[in-house]
Image: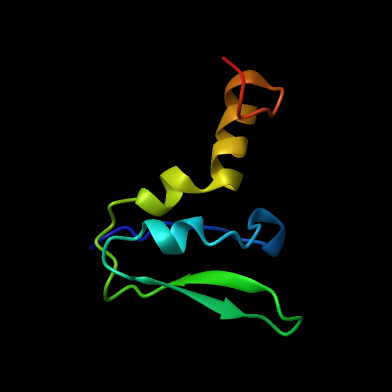
Length: 78
């Protein structure tokens, strides 16, 4: 069974930038409008090949990973 990437669990974990949508090589991500008009990504599990390119380009995930490593939260730290 393939492990589908989790782009966000709560809306606060997604900025709606469409980077994941643009990075997906198989078009498995659609941007869906919520009840307030904001766009959020939805992964088509049938199309997803689990390459995780969507996670690698996500600015929210990059920021989260930086925070976990440094405790400071900047994705620009060296």
